[in-house]
Length: 133
Image 1 (cartoon, rainbow, N blue to C red):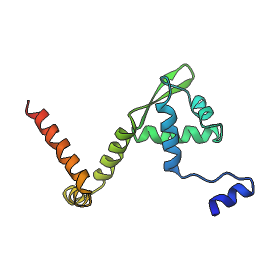
Image 2: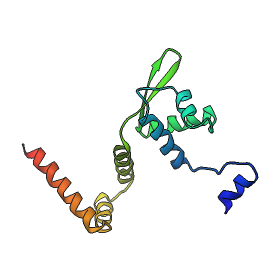
Image 3: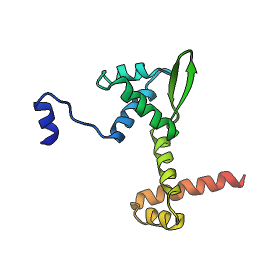
Image 4: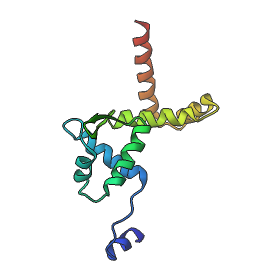
C-alpha cells in the first residue's frame, strides 16, 4: 500500500538502486550499438534525471557491467555482457569478498535445487573437458 500511496499523491514509486541498474542495462542491451546517456534517459520514458542516469552508468562501469568510449564531447555506453554475464560478474565479486572461498562455495552448492546441481555438474564437466584438449 505504501508504494501505491506515492502514486495517490502524485509521486511515482521510489525504485531501488538494483532495479534502476537493471532497467538501464536492459535499455543498453536493446540499443543498436554504443549510445549516449541521453539516449538511455529517453528510453526510460524520461522519468529519471540525466544526472541520475549518469550516476547509474558510472556505477555500472565500476562493476564492469558496461563499457564506455569517448565520441567528441560525450561518452558512448555499451552493455558489457548479457544478463547472465552480469549475474556471473556479481557472483564472482561476492565470492571475492569471502575470506573462506571454499566454505562460501560449499554453502552455495548445498543450497542448490537438485536440477540446478545437475546443471552445474554438467557445466563443470564440460569446462573440464575443454581444458583437457
